[in-house]
Image (cartoon, rainbow, N blue to C red; front, side, top):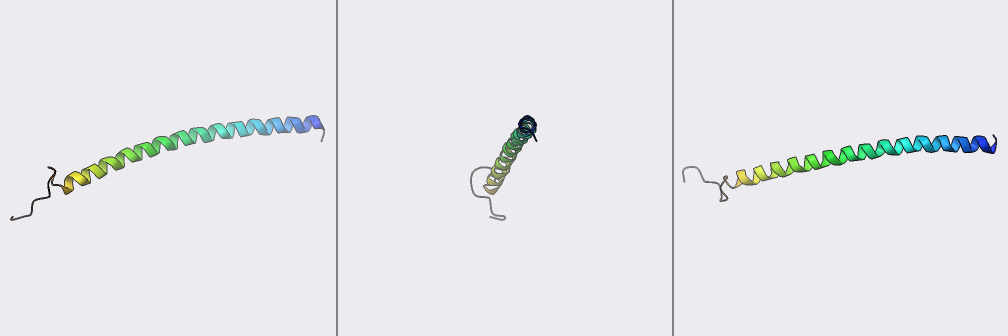
Length: 66
């Protein structure tokens, strides 16, 4: 294999790696959006649980028959 062929093969590999890196960057952006979405949903669920645990008015829940 001549030096020119090795350089050409190296350039080809570099172009393939560039495409792979671009795909990984896009996937990372998508994962970041998913994580933020899940975090927002979790915060809403935690808030609902806290509000429900306090009876919805900030105090302890009322006891039945009390």
